[in-house]
Image (tube, rainbow, N blue to C red):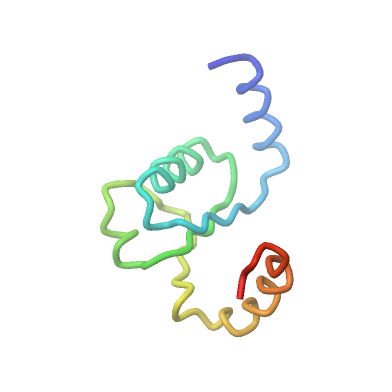
Length: 91
């Protein structure tokens, strides 16, 4: 890896944050999630169908998986998302 990428990963590990990945049905997302978890770079929340995500070939141990269609957070977060994105045409 490049020195820049190595320093970026080291800084991320020092101030470990939680990252939400909204496209849990995308194989590229799951592959990246596996890498982030394996390197202990960040805590992850993956949004998508839990059954499909858990049956993927990727080791996502430690990730929190939330189904946005059935989550209790849906009613609470939908208005916030709308406010943040209405200027982009979200309805």
